[in-house]
Length: 167
Image 1 (cartoon, rainbow, N blue to C red):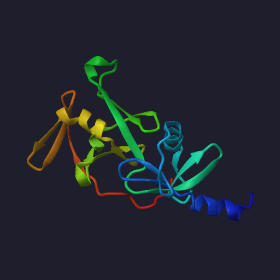
Image 2: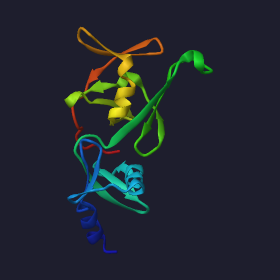
Image 3: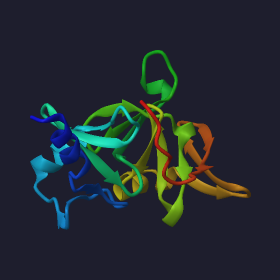
Image 4: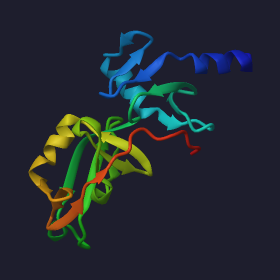
């Protein structure tokens, strides 16, 4: 394929990830479960720092309204429950992948949404993931605190979508 045409197709993919974590193609909501899974699994930073998604060998740029990564589930295991001690917190991304999650990176943003850092990238917690932490969150003078397995983590402040950055 002509490289100029391929670049134009990537630029005009029509793919958008809205602030609720829903994919759109042009003006239509993407609802097919397998298509959504493939789109989430393909999310990556392109060489120029913009978000993109890959399907097979091909990829296209992705317009992201808020966060490109979404945490749909969080699990914790207390130090007493695991060999070697230390709190283990894991997050399941919308892609289905399980990754380590550092509770110290939790931050509160617009509309009371919670965010965390996953591999250095900003990830938004879905409502169910956020609700799963609700019993561990408390408000104190100066902000919120998350308490997990006897450890306390101050919830920071999210500053919104990040500028482009190269991977």
